[in-house]
Image (cartoon, rainbow, N blue to C red; front, side):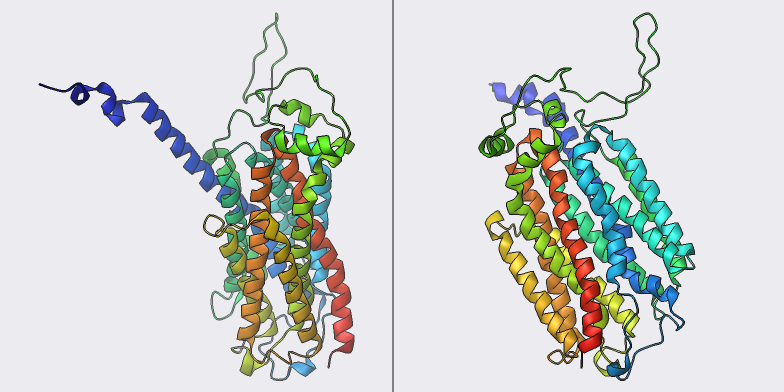
Length: 462
């Protein structure tokens, strides 16, 4: 006798519509994870390259050659007239401006239009810096790189609110990859012992990056219907509207029906448990009510801002002053030392941003990362002031810089993952956008502080 189970038509997985649909959904999820990794990589690539090229940009105003080899006595190294913190400010202030405005104004602009601006800003930045003959034009190119990176970060992180939480880790890993691949590419392309290109040739070669960014969003990413897209229509003829392309944002009602109370407790409860709120109501909240809604985010944002302040104070205020002689630096010139410092820092960032699946950090432990990064900054400040008295070889400093990158990357990915898990879906897009202000504020304060620290150390060391 043949059992019923032996001829059950549902026993064949390949014939089941449910399994076919599940397989297709998994394929789309895989595409989206890869897409967010590439978006993170390409979005931050130009930002990283500009910081790696900071000394090259500033040397355009110097009469001496850009790279004159390793030095035998570091006591005779003169300080640059302008700190690399100036490049950092040009690389972050425009980005911060966008991040301050965008959460309150850009949510009604389709993601595709914002993406188009990001691509064009990136292309313009590479061209301006590559063909610049003065420090002013070079800094202007850095400004456009900052505009593209800031708008891109707030656009793609906001877009992630319409996907599964896993895209946050892939985005973060991609941004970490931008750090290591961007800094490594610039260092390798310009190192005379490797490809030996000049800065202009290296920057022009990197125009492939915005091309990849455009193709990733346009062809690889599978956006859900809930995302805000371009909607163009022909004029109405006899009551008929013909749409050209795109799709309306679904799930929106035409009216706003609910009023909100102003108490902080209600705001917190609405932030954490407001899944039933209509998304359009979130978009129409006033600026002040949005600010009140963002207050619970401070416990995530403050530690992240401190971490970024400390690490960029190190990278742009101290590293250019931490120069080893030929015998203790593997015969690297000061310019090469600075570039490889950036590579090691970004390697640490990449590893920690990619490891949240294996080593997640609880939100309650995020302040400890800020404390550890402050200790790093204090240690290297006194070392730069005392002429590397306790760091006899460059390998020790390289280890500290790598560790610094691990802390920074861990703070970033765990902060945004915690926000994504904690905040309700209706409020998630705004909250993630608003939280991006934290790292930028930390970097801005680091930029100003690093300029003063650079001048102080140059006047008082040894």
